[in-house]
Length: 484
Image (cartoon, rainbow, N blue to C red; front, side, top):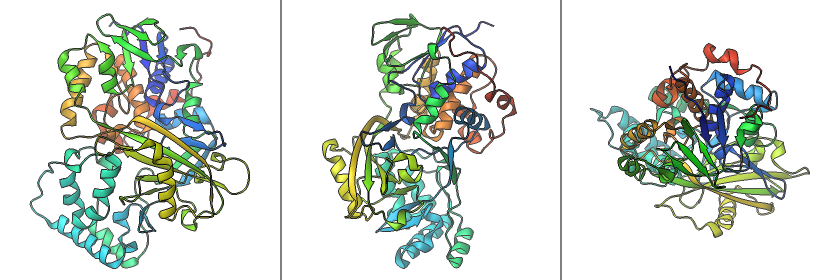
């Protein structure tokens, strides 16, 4: 069987590094990775602002569905981890309701609690249950009108930036805690919190450097000569199987692994069938603005030990706020009294954002929400925008994405990763890394692409024990001075 020949990878985010790591591990020497930015990480990169505060591009945490992924991260960072038990919540009328909200109805005011419970019971006993036409119908059919109005509809419209009737629901999987009425009734009677749900109920975080420290460390396990930074691609010539960089350099490839957003890849590719290009025009996404607020002074007692909070109220511009200093004490400058909050704001055609005024608006809202005491000083205000923040799971998404991916595959171009595959249900860092790993295994004839093709199987934890890969994940790499 003819091998894949030279493989060029676009993007040094988790998916691109996963592909590069597995190529190196399996001994395929003819590969090159090109990254537009000055370092690795992609959407999982981190920054240190001029005042010494560390920031991520959103509220990332490390939990995993794969033993192999965990082993690679262990190898990259060793014991330089901090371990946390999740404490997250929904901020409603100045009160923190433990996450998931639907498991902690006893914390709601009596009228809201009764309405939520009545809606849940009505949804559970509605028969027959039809297949939802959209995400709006799924929410109502699953949680009822009470919780839909209180949280699920306003929050999801904020985070996605699109009307819920325009979204599908097949992406849900493990990302939403489904109601269990018997459990709810027992919990209501006991009046105790029930927050121990979900795959991220415990997580780890790098001791220093933010999430980006992970990907810097993973990249350091690879031959430096095969990694090109500050090397943005501007054109992919599908027929000639060449790639043009912004510098004018042309690079030949037998297989191209792209982790760029699918719509960008289509726009820069020549020789693409018109039907494939037309499909790319149907993709939808939202952008994310991250506002880091570096602080000094008193902090609310309610934020002690809290990781992140969800905000459904329209009066708050952000959908989520992370107490980033609680993840690591090294996220703030040395000295007494420093702490930090990191807010995320959605931008879409339905949700425009005035970027120039956003920092001030976020600080004002944090004070109004009771998260930022008047006597606490704002010593740093950091802003970052990513055009591609969330791959929108729009209605009919799979009928667009599957033939789009297939059209590229037939040209020897394989698009994977958070925006490369456009599947939110497998868009976490571990999913993206393993999309790269599994693609390489398919190209080399030693495995299959389970993450992309069977998200439910992966998210059920089928690969936490992975003897096929685990034996090699901690092995020695060859010298980093190899030439491409």
